[in-house]
Image (cartoon, rainbow, N blue to C red):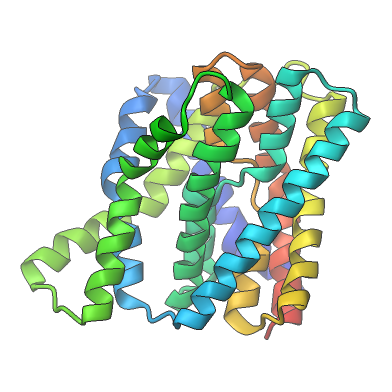
Length: 308
């Protein structure tokens, strides 16, 4: 019964917004790049800033989270490299396959889910924000290297990272929090309104993006194995590491749930931008997102049993 309540109260609202976004996109054909820029440069930074400004995270806990994330990503990279060889994938397919398992949609899927789950505990959302920032760094280093290792220098990748508004928002929110600097009400109110808009707009955009993906040939070996890796192997590795690191409570619950999210839409965006099997990348995003309605529900339920 409880797992049904989780689906109704957490996953179903997200699915509704995804469906609405897909329907609106088919009806009106929005400029998705413009909406994406609105989220990236305005709504998401506001949500990141407010959560980090309001939440206290101990330095020891922060280092534990970073240590976990580094180990988790390294293990997934090793696993995907082995699976890619077993599947005898060519270089392009291998890059999409590896990114499909290692890169997680921690932004416009992960944060809304966390906001619904951890409404009464902002620490859970703040941990998801740390995961999101880490995933963005991983995307524009490892993920980008997979696709275009011969055409981008380390300095160019660093410049891309430093231009990301969420990095600025994270630093500013954490700094003002640490220094306990009060924010005037006339500044706080508009930032709060922008942050409140993030959840709905992000999911509507994701639905609109998914509406543009073709369903043809979506079931093939690479996509199926990639989906199993992202939605099943990922959480399994996460659970193992949580016990190894001795994590518990909200920290363990948040990290476990974060490991279960579908493939990052950025993996599809980069594949399209650099013309590396863009259809395969987009279909992986769609397939994992649809299946995640089942797997994320189960992981959330399991997390409430293991990490009360």
